[in-house]
Image 1 (cartoon, rainbow, N blue to C red):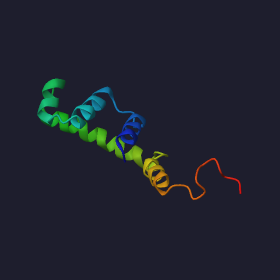
Image 2 (cartoon, rainbow, N blue to C red):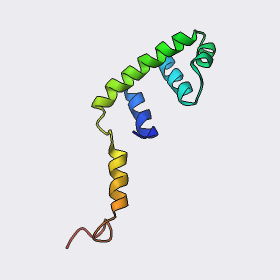
Image 3 (cartoon, helix red, strand yellow):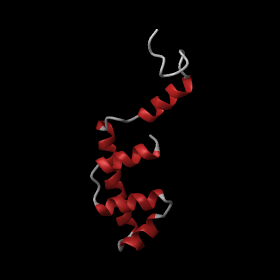
Length: 91
């Protein structure tokens, strides 16, 4: 799953504002201790919020209709078109 697809799934997961903020900070490389301090809770609290968000994202990714499409698109583009282009579909 690429970063854009992950962000789409995260949006579809209906994260709370707090969960979204914790996930963004964690993806930016912040420690749970830093996230907790910033959000006014403990390191353990930040971890719990993150885990709740990850569970929501995981459940959503199983039903997200576009999972894997970027990889398929990249594969098809790298293969090239045997007829020389998309505009030459007719024989």
